Image 1: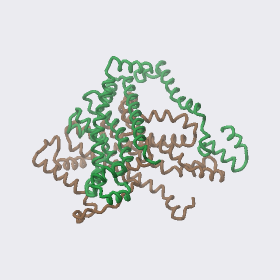
Image 2: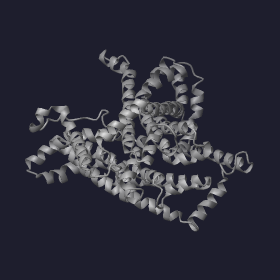
Image 3: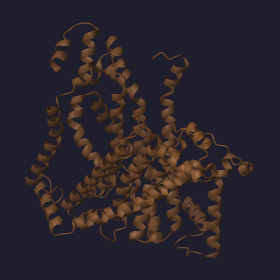
Image 4: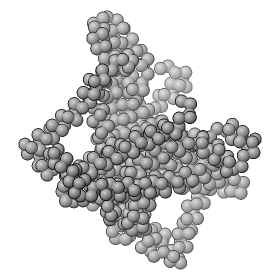
Length: 286
Length: 290
């Protein structure tokens, strides 16, 4: 493809221009302009590998203080020590359990509240503006208030995580309920569905894609919120607490390990949620 | 909090709440009608306020847990008079302006470069994805060790928060420009600069602006995070300080202010967005001369 484009640019006239542009933005000449997969993969790892080499070199040649930039093998050693001798896995499990509890509370409350606001006009007029006002406050700004009301223990952390999970679920459930087709509702009414029937047979299924989007976001938010909660309420085990402890003790390797786990868990949660979402929505015509 | 932007489209719209979401016109319940449309919204906050006042008057809760509304008002007036409130707000805003500008410009440049060139995309995308995977909150302790807890830390953290959505959306924006536009530009023998300046960038403006607004929202949240963790000035610090002193009135005032400023920043961006895109509507009115 590259060769043909190159020979093309030697031509004269508009056609040559199109090909010349396709060099600038190959998208325009279709997907076949992509570099072969293998080369693409090689290019993808080029920068990360270069960075890692530079890191190793800088650390070993003492260009940068190894306390600030510990060599890679030291980070790996810390990882092993933390897993085998220390209780990294315990911290991770504590964070995940906390995350799961907060997420569940937030999601269940969120679906209920979103359904109420989405279906009841009265509730919508009364509470939606307040809800929209309150959610303007950046979620982390709640931490000081929550810590006064609930202390620094598990209750406070779970309250905070639930709040973080609640917001996207309410918003998306609300939108989903609102977007239910009027015709379907009319059919339901003709068939004399009772209100609970309307909700379970009609509104909830038709809002499901939107609700799942909300739950997906809630999963991501509640993980970040778990770590955030552990940063500020440092009582008890957790990955966030581990990172903060690493910073206080100036153990860069521990901080890096913590961040790596943070990113990895976030990535896995996101992937898992996408897969479940796709599976639950199989029935939908695409 | 760093993930809004992983998805555009419906999620983005729903998260944005008021942005373009279709709202069915709702009739007011008959018995609320005398209150009028807007006033109904005030019923809940006013009842809460009444409950709060009652609770304070009868001392159902100790004032360290829930100060009286009058105390909060008194605190507000005092902090306003002493200029503390304005000072902390100004410091926070200035940090966001610096950090956001840096992050947005770098993000725009990277996003556009990735959008225009497959080569740049191939080289940078995996590294960028890995970088974006760790939430802003995760980078703060690392950066604290690297650059200390000075002003540089705040700017860097805020810049990172704005950089990620900005890159993603500018990239998606450039890719969303219909190929036909490029072909027309080719017929007119545009050079690369003309193509970029007159076709690609204007075509990509709507998604780029989505990036700007998410970037700014994220920047504001990152500011709160970094000021909570390491700061001696700013609205986030006001929260921490109020917490330590058990001055809940200060905590509440700071929270409300954080909400208002965040909302205001987004609204300002929405206005700029509409202004910048006026040509689209103007063209439409004239029957589209694109």
